[in-house]
Length: 241
Length: 241
DNA sequence: CGCACCGTTGATTAAACTCAACCTATGTGG
DNA sequence: CCACATAGGTTGAGTTTAATCAACGGTGCG
Image (cartoon, rainbow over all chains, first blue to last red; front, side, top):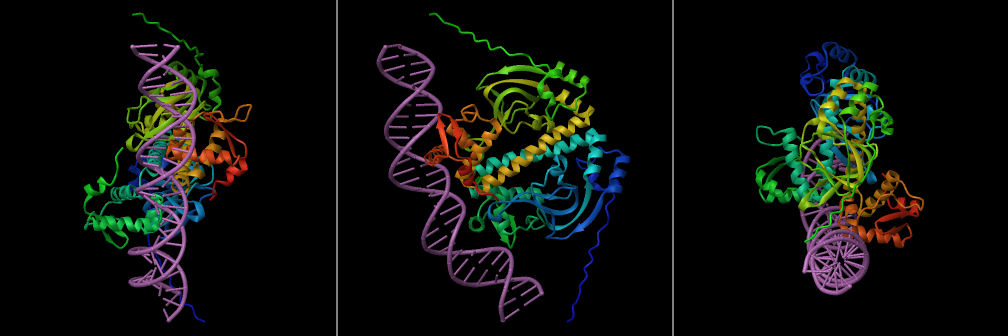
């Protein structure tokens, strides 16, 4: 029996913290040149292909990941394995810090949605930087607080809004978060099931509601991609507080 | 016409940070004696009576409150004024830091549920301490991360569990958070509507489910207070992941 | 080809909300 | 003191929303 082995080599440029565009991002902008050097020499960068599970809920954290490029989803596994997507992470985001900071098992799993170049920073280095540089700690605190604000909003949304409203909202959020291409199509493709797992509903409900929006000429569907053609009408589906 | 004016003076002992029991709490334990002194001399303590609204969603934050004693609820105002309770704060908790840190309007309103002695720390002092003492910043980061973990869990709960499960869970959470008195009755009294506003349901649903639990001999009701008499049966109402 | 995964549709069911009425306790003004 | 208003609690009936169940079509892949 013969096996054909296909080796696919995807190349990626190893990022250097010192001239990484992300150092201008909120988190790393306050690091000193020396600290950037420490970061650069201890970080471990790799390309993670679509579908890879980076880490799982309940697993012990070893550090944080800085997203140089790519898209990932953070989710919890709920009742009967149903996944609840907590949020998406993309270029410039840092994930895994919650678990690294408090030294508890991860509260979410992370899966690569689009090939990603990630820099891993171990907990020791993270803590060294946090202790040495309180501005850095404050910036990470900022990130955590922003996420917390979003989470609080989302609790209210899920608790009070209808499935239709939540889907309308998520479409707008995806648009603002991922942008649109030249044809105005939102730059992320999610399965119907994934959308359901964001807003906390059944796949069939998502299908029906997307199809409603389509027949009301509010959106256009291109497979997994969505184009919003009437943002105002879409917003009218959202009860504002 | 005569008016009878009743002046009620409630006394409270002004807390001194240096020997405040809370300094052993996670947040303040890393402050130096000097920093505790700064904290002590700039903080403003007051007694806030039940019913007082400390601050409102959307309002600009001026600092954080350290809870010396008392109970408060943090909530968002959602659709048609329906309140969504995000969480409760009690002795030893610090509230308002999210807004103070990121310099955005508050994302929740806060109301006093039980007379509270609160120490107000203005944003300047907070930032001074954060900058001077990275351990302090790390500890606040810890608090934010814990809250974030809880919020993520709650998103999954609300999205996936039934109202009955959520109520069962909240009763257990209230018990562990507030403890029970000598008769085993949970040390917090909430209206049916407030319970509804925690789990995101209608008041009537809470009434019906509590009454179900009562007739199944799982809980006993004493007005607004609840006694859990069969914790195992209550837990059976919660689907575990 | 056959399998797996995704998307779609229709029919049915179940969960929870809404509405309405009524009860009780508490507090208020006349 | 009574009359009344207010807020919280309760119950029942009817309706709505969304979940579930089932069947089926399309697509890509080994």
